[in-house]
Length: 134
Image 1 (cartoon, rainbow, N blue to C red):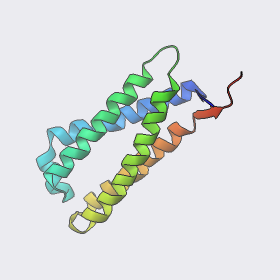
Image 2: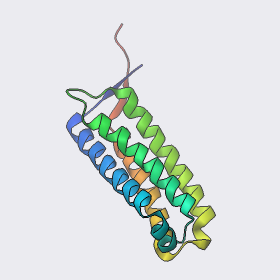
Image 3: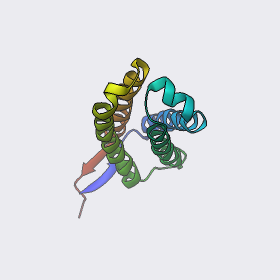
């Protein structure tokens, strides 16, 4: 089986969205982690971890989005898997931190699952496995 990418222009737009959302979350979290911690009702350490992880996703997404003319399928596949794994970790964070989070923190934790899972799903729709010709 060979892995290929479909509709690369649309995939590129999704990757840019992933980079923007992750980058914005990372910069805001790293720059204002103390304030975000109080506003969201989450620990400073958790805010910093979320910021660091989303920053890494943003770097990977932008590095894929800028590749011309074609994007290699394997790194996109890794990003999709990583997004799904982070969505699963985010479910755990939601369960563990829900009680102490403010209303905004609860919404943030829920949105993190929806957005990261959604990006993984959207990016994954452009990765196909096809039978290789012999």
